Image 1 (spheres, helix red, strand yellow):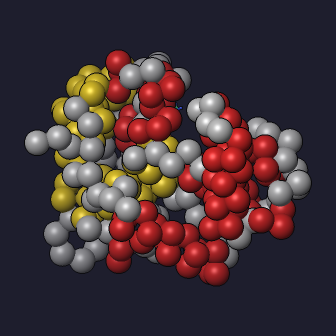
Image 2 (cartoon, protein in one colour; image 1 turned 90 degrees about the horizontal axis):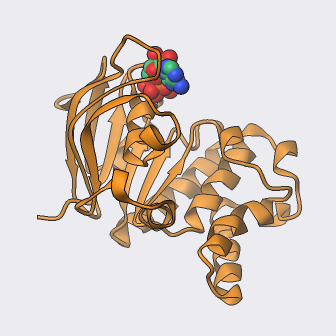
Length: 228
Ligand SMILES: Nc1ncnc2c1ncn2[C@@H]1O[C@H](COP(=O)(O)OP(=O)(O)OP(=O)(O)O)[C@@H](O)[C@H]1O
């Protein structure tokens, strides 16, 4: 069977650190599945998201053992251009993701780098901005937006890539109630489209739409059984 994501015996520590943040993590996720990762602060949820999306080891380095596969391919062998159509991550802190002078440029960056036709790029910008309700802020500088608005722009910039797998790492934590509802509806649409979704949830906002919940405790992963 081909898994959208397969993590085998993953163990990781950051460069120069003694503590292993992830310890022998194993996880298999089917295409079209929505999996929520929960756990207390500092237990390695973001670190696991970085491993799944190739940021570890490509950007952070560190001591990594085990392997992550996306659709049977080891991510360490995937080129950056192959990664972006397979998996898109929305970070907890939008400031790490936003770098363009305008909202529109930010959302256009991914599709433009995929060298898509202009009409397709425009369609994706239009759609992504509409989903997140930021179509009236096209020409705004992302640095001048509120935290919640920045998160919505970061989300739109990943939606416009239309990857097979989405990783939402507390992606809407600062977004207002209406915005959260709109994103929840979008995630439901992505589910219908058989996209694979990983959600890190601190406040459990979207747990009800997850097919499965896994708990990360002190770097070890367990299936969630029972109520927290
Ligand atoms: N770049 C880094 N270098 C060294 N240690 C790091 C780095 N990033 C995170 N850590 C450490 O790794 C541990 C796990 O952090 P991580 O952000 O993965 O946890 P988390 O479960 O996502 O927490 P939160 O819910 O607060 O976001 C923490 O002790 C953190 O201090």
